[in-house]
Length: 117
Length: 111
Image (cartoon, rainbow over all chains, first blue to last red; front, side):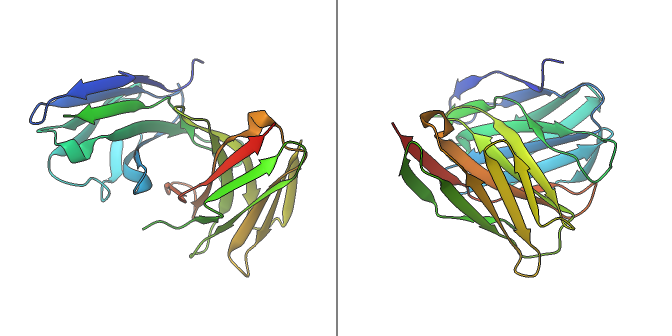
């Protein structure tokens, strides 16, 4: 498996524009997480899904942020309209059941560096 | 809210020395994990310790867990320049819960 794949790797956009970040989790994983990383706030959980269903979106900062997982192999994080304070690195991670259901680890993508000017 | 808190925030050592990073957390956990992040890359899982374990080894890594103090430490022995990275602890309360990451420790290993 190629791991968690995120696209694009870098995105520069103007304030007010819509931004869509994409993620392909590892095949067979039933959990998908979206994190945002900044110097000031560290790594923050935005939302996570189980079997394509959103479980906890309490970390989504505002209504401008939305996330979908239409199927087990694809998820999007959309920001509309984007603002300069949304500039950050956005990570997608997936995890799945191991032999022991308690021993799961998160596999991260390479991240999307978003700059809103 | 953030659960894990690492200290120190930054650590600079010479190659060959040992590096110790600590993590504290607030609630009960199922397991605690350590991750590494190289600059500009995603996090990579290093080691997991269950709540009923006290110590675990993997190569040059040694992790301890003290559930009574709600703390963990990561020891990297005989450090190398290639160990330069940020290290994060993450706690998992139970399966199906999210991974909660601390702010991380930036480790610099000088050649």
